[in-house]
Each structure stands twice: as structure tokens, then as C-alpha cells.
Image 1 (spheres, rainbow, N blue to C red):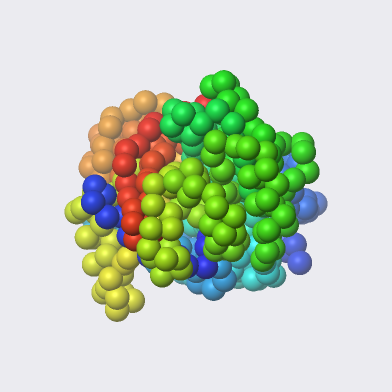
Image 2: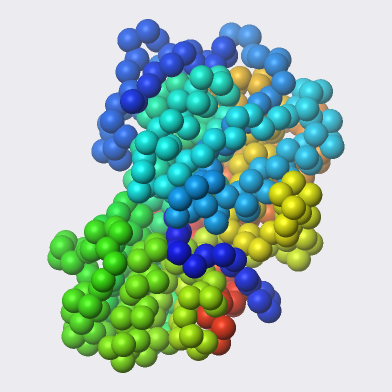
Length: 446
């Protein structure tokens, strides 16, 4: 992912809307001289290179750990993610479980956010100590970059439902994601900006893996469509540091470049950038955002502040029935209805895919699951199936399968990214809420 903003209480989609190398799980073991590399996107060696599938797959009940944000600026994303994982486990167990045994979620750990990476480091250690074969999360790409070496070097399959940073593509053979890389979202966002008649574009972007990566992809899309970036372009050094609270100079510089549109790529900082744009007289219908800040601002700004502004969010729009199921799950387990569905579908599919990989490989260890993730996603074609129960039946018949879940992603490619995915286009209404308009499908090569 990677989106965060202070006022994200609900994404009301109206209308159509220590790096520690502990012992691996008992089923997948690194060699004794394996050490964790730094959590950097520039790592040249797969952290999980020494991991091997066991000669005899584990028949233990499948345990899935989670590393999701229950504290910090991304905590609003925890309810939909937990609902996606939890509902998937309920559906799996209702269909007979994995290898005849119920699946459990244990442990559930707090990933925190990038403002305090000690939280996610501690969570990764907890997952390793628990010897889980699979960990669902994290939501933030920066958080994942902090723990991915720690987790995958311990031979745990990590599946993020929300990471979009391009730096994570092909990072580790034990890392998968059910959200598309920013190359897909950037292509869609840039094309939308140009299609709306904007030739000159300014970026107000924070200096974070997510922000600069998405800016670069969006800029490439704008320029390939004949547009020009007049402020905040790659290589110009005009990004601001995460956590900055005043933006008078950035807004003045952006507007002074005479753009047709301004793109805000930020998290919490958006709540300070928008009022500054308003105070300097910018036409707010000419503002564009991304999944980092395309959110409900009804309680943050005066009515009409963002009316007409647009934004993107990766993922297919959830059906009414599926929204009801997610919300019902959260009502039953947390005591309140679910108001935000961001990445719920991707969390659901991440869990289903891990379970199907265990079924296909006949084992619940990490090595077996890792070896079969691509196969159950449809990377080798196979029988199409849309539920866990249908897919297990198809697997019982022999051969490969192609799970087509609610997130709408395509099979995993050779970098363990979705080969295709949908990007939703949203427009803010008079209440400063993003309303779904349409979706475009892109491929990871876009």
C-alpha cells in the first residue's frame, strides 16, 4: 500500500459506489551460515535463498500469522485487513479446512508504521519465534522493507495484501503480494490526469519509498502521453520529508510553476497540504491523489473543499454482498460494522491462496506453500475456480487450478507480483468523500 491520513475514519464509497535470524519453522530450514541482509530494496541476494522445501511435507494444522497495523497512522487499515483474513479462514474451515484440519490465525502482531520501525521489527521476531509458515502483511511498503529480510530469511512465506512499492518486485522468492506494484497505479493515475486535459503537472510528494516510486511511475505515464511535469519531477530534489507539517513554500513553488493540475502523494501530511492549497487560491477540482490519501475527509475539511478532485485506489470495487460479509464479520468479532473496505479483498485472497497452496502441495510447511503459490494462482493455467471449496474440488481431480478471487488480480508473475490488477478511479463529492467512478485494468509491465 500505503496509504494513511489523519482523518481516515472510513472510506465511505457512496453511490456505485535487531535483525534476528531465528530457527525456521520445522518444515523449511536455512543453512547455518545464513545471515540477514539489511532491509534495503538494493539487496542483491534473495534473503530466502537458503530455504528449502522439506523432503516430507508437514501435516500439522495450518497456522497463519498476521503483521498488520493495530497502532500508528495506518491503524485504520487494520479492520478491513483483519476482516479479509478472518473471513477467508471462516470460509476455508467451513469447507473442511486444510488437509482435514481447521486453519487458525496465530499470532496476530502489530506492524505499527514507518514512524517507529521498532514495532514491526518486534512483530517479525514474534512471528519467527512462533514458527508460522505464513505471515499476512504488512500494509506499508516501508514497514515491509524493514522486516522482509528478517521474515523471509527465516523461511516464512510473507504475503502482503497492500504493498505497492516497485522496489519489492522480485525481492524474495518467499515474498508475494496481492496488490499491484505502483507501476500499474502510476500508469492509471497519469493517464487519467492527461485524459482530463491537463498538460502541465506539478507533484507535491514526500521522500518515501512509496511516494517517490509512485511519482516516478505517474510521471512516466504523463510524459508518455504528451504531458510535462513542471514541479516535483524525479531528480529535481523537490520532495519533502515525511512528517513535515507546514507546506507554504512547497505549495507556493508548485502553483508558481503554472500547472494545470497538482498531484499530492503523501500520507498524514495531506491534512496540512490541502488547507494551504485552499488558502493560496488553488482550484481544488484540479487536485489528484492516490491510495495514500484517497480517503474520507468529511470530518477534516469544510464541505465542498475537495469536490471534483480525483484519486486512485488499487483493487476491484467490492460487491455489495461481499461488503456485507466483511462488515458482518467485523460486527461479530469487533462489535462494530466495517466502514472501510480498503484491501479487504486482497487480504482475503492472500489467505485463500496460501491455503490452496498447502492443499495442492499436500503440506502446511512454508517450503511447500511457497512452491505452490504460483500454481494455484493460475500461473500455469489450470481449471478456473472462484472459491476455496470449488478449488479444492478441482485439485482433488488432479491438475492445476486458477483461483479467481474477489480482488480480481491475475496470476503471479516471475516476480511474485499480480500479473494484472484493477485500479479504481474515484472522485470526491461535496462531503469530501471519494466516490467510485470506474476501474481500469493494467498489467505489471505497464
